[in-house]
Image 1 (cartoon, rainbow, N blue to C red):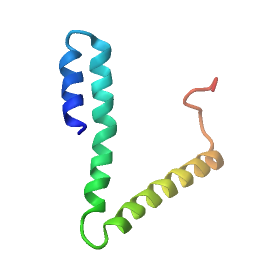
Image 2: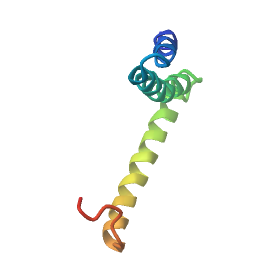
Image 3: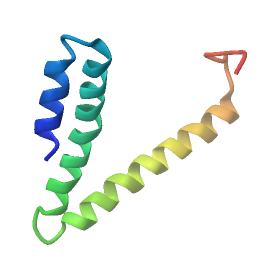
Length: 80
């Protein structure tokens, strides 16, 4: 259901560049979603696998945030 609109947007993007970026954005968002759907349907532990991946990513991002606050260092974008 996502492949046909993405291909149409990518093809139309050669004539009008903003549509190319829209098509690429659709593909960029759709691929991880399809990956989660495939993982979810993969046997008895599919749902647990998806939850595990999300918890690990959230946990490591949170730990990196707090470690960065404690360690400090030069800011990448000082004005923000």
